[in-house]
Length: 284
Image (tube, rainbow, N blue to C red; front, side, top):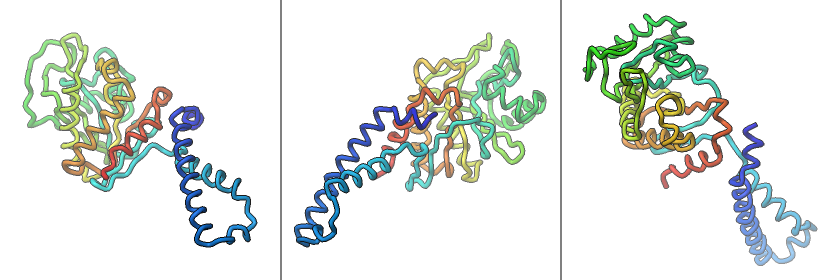
């Protein structure tokens, strides 16, 4: 369980010790000042101060350090970032779908069935490739491709990296962003720079189309893009958060970013460290 794992995390115990000692000092000074200006008042209460002070300090430290849900609200801009463990497609909000620069969706030989694109096809479009391609073509209308007639399995038209195709299905916006480039053998790759620019364009599109509604995103770069060796999962989460916050400080993107962690990935993430990172982004 996440809770027991957090309680075994040295970061929790360091925070508990720091908060406990700080609160013990604070309450001790406060009690001493009270006794200085109101002599003999404490004696009349007949309280075991030597036990009460540590108990109060420990209670405050536990409350302060306890592993709460990983989330942070920011007042400037007025937005929120939250991490949840679960299924991306169970989120009742708009979704981010990572794609290649060809916007291929056909499974299993071009796109993996367990990828986010594969799940979009299976769970939202019920394996109707024609319907999904039709919606993507409509969303890409007016966007200028960088190459046509490419000989490869699947689609033959390549769009600029960072292109966003926003499709709507049953009141949900699916922001399909091209952040990987696909070669003629359908292998995909990307880089930190490409990913950052693609996210910048994604947030711009979310800002203009979502009407401020929350958006849920997977941890970008964990699939076949080859980024996992360069951007481990903990760094990938921070990268996504930073990109969203920088864009939000320029101009508010939406009310909330929900980062959805797959259950099988949860054990690889230090949630307490992510919470500290979120708090560090608050403006003074």
